[in-house]
Image 1: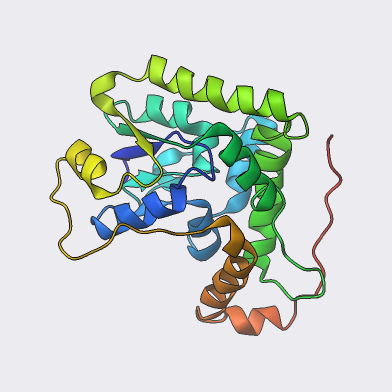
Image 2: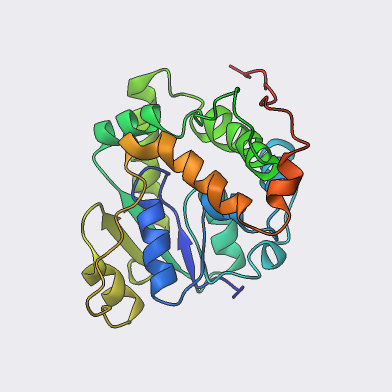
Length: 238
């Protein structure tokens, strides 16, 4: 638990959920956008305020139940978090830039939460945060494909430049347990396949799966009965 042992610097849609699940399997509880939804100790507005207003979160409090943090929203603050925990290992997940760009467009750029459906309050709050930090934040240049891909590649090079090699693992899609476990000094799990989660074609279904997991928590389904089946609309800053 905090202080964090592992910080993910990679953008979303670079295998971050698979990495999160792998770290969980290795006994290193990992923070991820999905955990912001599902973990009742998490407050999505902390990340929104940090990004939009310059609010300084208490990272020890935010990550008190975690040994690792990957994916957005944490990845948007990876350098600040690394300065807080300078001995942490940094994992930079990467994939082909054009494949990454296409995957973002099919998935996380705007969560597919149909307005005719009822969605739990925690999912709605997390979606609003993601719009600030991700869609209108890190991905604000998405409409300009060349600029967005260049930003993505510049980010990768910057992380490689500032993080000492002994603290950094650059992990590509499909590399599996070997590089990760070697980097962490842990044995490869026996008879356990490396997770393969959150494929772009499944993203809409994934939102419903997360909703059902959340609604299985005590009191959540009851609270939903008072939620209007309409997502709050947020005016784009673009």
